[in-house]
Image (tube, rainbow, N blue to C red):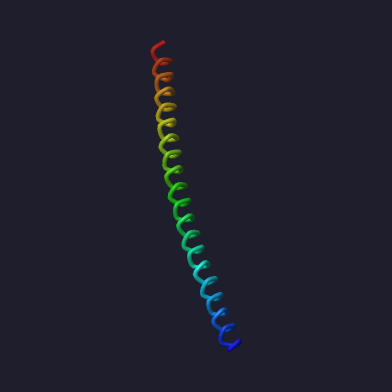
Length: 71
């Protein structure tokens, strides 16, 4: 009888820890995917800002160059 009870307790323990591991892995995967998406969004924003900055610098250089030609 003790062996049966101990076996059932051992099985319950193993199933419990396996379930926790799976849910932990799922949560970790979701967090990783979320972090990847956030990073991609942030990199896109930085790229857009750099592009805008480059356009502004180009415009200023062009204005300076054409202004220098007029004098």
